Length: 143
Image 1: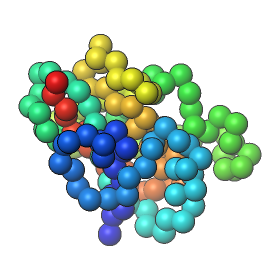
Image 2: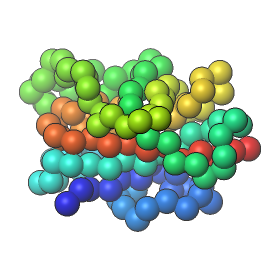
Image 3: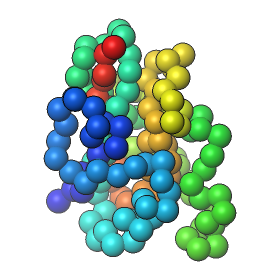
Image 4: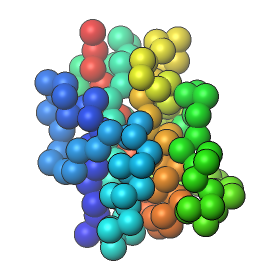
């Protein structure tokens, strides 16, 4: 059984998405508290992106991310979490046609092909809590 988690940005849009737990991926402390109580080690993550070249509501598998937020949710929490560094090699389950997302923080930067808000932060924390399978999807909001 996989845990399904939805970003607040996706949940607050009018885009249909799977049912799951809605979390603010940018709120590291809330995400940490959430992960502490989770027993399953497989997670499906859904977030929002904006790309005018892709169909509205298209679901895009994520193969990798670039953290462009200027922050890392581990900074200042290393001692509490018992970790100094998390190896992000092959963090996502790979999908044919998967994309690389650039996590931008509060405002999406459309200079990137598939921008996201705080997906990178959430996945860093998921890896910290030793999730064995991390699958992420972006759902396109075409403006």
